[in-house]
Length: 199
Image (tube, rainbow, N blue to C red):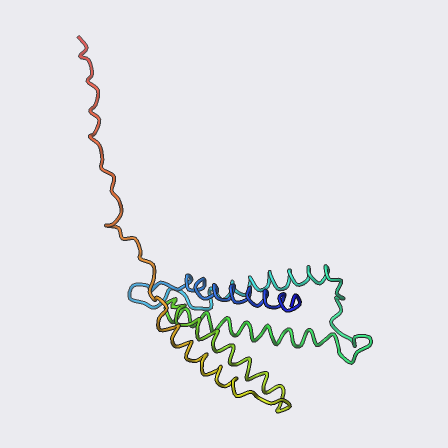
């Protein structure tokens, strides 16, 4: 049971971080210029999403490789196996490409929906679960029996996405208006001191 808790905790951490991703990127929604379109495209915040990936993934990955005693060689056959270290490059880059493409789609969805994370995020997470199941099914290529409950779960996921998206509170926090600001009453102006007449 203890061995299962570690991946479960990391999975929960992923859900927490990605769950906050949508509302956070929604804050980068471009304001509309008078008589024109948005002030910036979804690609502008997307650049700094890439910077964050670069800093955390590359720098953090290299540091943890050093801590774990990994080899910094990314080629050649691993001794005692038929696997190549290049697999880490190939599959890691492919996974990163899919992640970056997903981040771009999510960022664009948030920008074009005017920061409506309540609509976008249930579709993202519900759809991701379904796609993962389908991809795993394709990878097994009929070498396993599919429990009909999997299809039931997909249907329930779709229903859940619709219900959550429909009934999650929508809208934005109220903005402060100029006429709602507290005005400080000005006190009586100080009279200028009387000057003595010089005789």
